[in-house]
Each structure stands twice: as C-alpha cells, then as structure tokens.
Length: 193
Picture 1 (cartoon, rainbow, N blue to C red):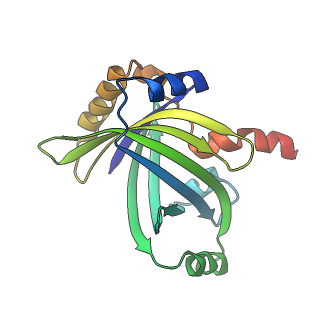
Picture 2 (picture 1 turned 90 degrees about the vertical axis):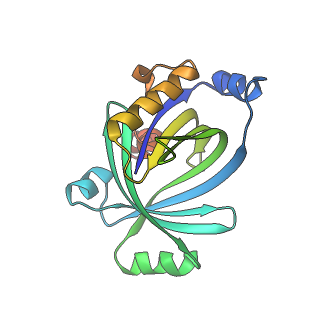
C-alpha cells in the first residue's frame, strides 16, 4: 500500500530545493507512464470499478500496474498490483484488442532526496522532487512524499507524510488534491470544445 501527497511548486521553488547545499539527491528516476481504460473518463471507469491500468517504462524495465486509488484531503491511498513485463508492444496489442484505449501519458523525472525506514522497517518513506509533463505543452513541478508498506496503518502513514512535508517547510494544508491526469489535461477539454 502507498500513502502519498504532493505539493505543487513554482519553478523557482523547485530550483531552490534542487540547488540547496542541504539537498543530496540519492538517485535520479525517469519514468514514462501510459494509462489505458475501456471508459471515456476516469470518473466513469471508477464508477464501474475499473482499476487504473498503467504501463510504466523505467530505465531498461517495463511494468504493468493495476491500481486502486482514493484521494481524501489531498492524501492519496493506492493499492497496486504490479508485474514486470517483457514485451510492451505485445501487452499494448492485448489491451487494444480487449477494448482498452490509451487515455493519458505522463513523463516524470524524479530526484529521490530521501528514503528511510519507519515502523520497525515495515514501512518506508520516499521524498521525491519531480518534474511531470504530458509530453506536449505542460510541465509541473512538485515535491511528492510517500509512505509505503504491506500492512501499514493509514493513520501512521499519513502522519509520516505530514512530518516529512513539515521538515521541508510545507504544510499538509497545501497538498494538491487533483490527480496528475487532472492537472495535466484540465485545459485540453476547454481547447477541444
């Protein structure tokens, strides 16, 4: 289970964090996500109980993820079932032939700033500084913090995330409640009418 939140940053805030002498990036991650659905909107898909279906390409590995998401007060709770895939093109063909359509793409570059164990090593907190793009005309900057673990208590996980945001000078009241899809496509609907 993942419990996470994100705070959107201005380009200046992003630069200030990444260039700060206190910032020590552990690892750079580049991820390309493509989401699929049988429904025209994520709202309708959720009403019918469809999992978020994602293909992620990361370095030299690819994954299929089925994801169930809840967002409450800017905190996102995800239950993910993920498996590594050998041939992305075969999976894309299978999804297409099964009635799925590509609905959304997300390009993400993250700098893992911190990763530490919590709950007697049953959970882990990750702090990432990110740029997110739709691959077209929109780039967003964010600080995203997640607490992950198999049987982690949601209240404890939430507090771990709040504490981590506080350590970076951000209040949990500033958490962004919208999903990346909503943020990256919100103007597309207006432009297509």
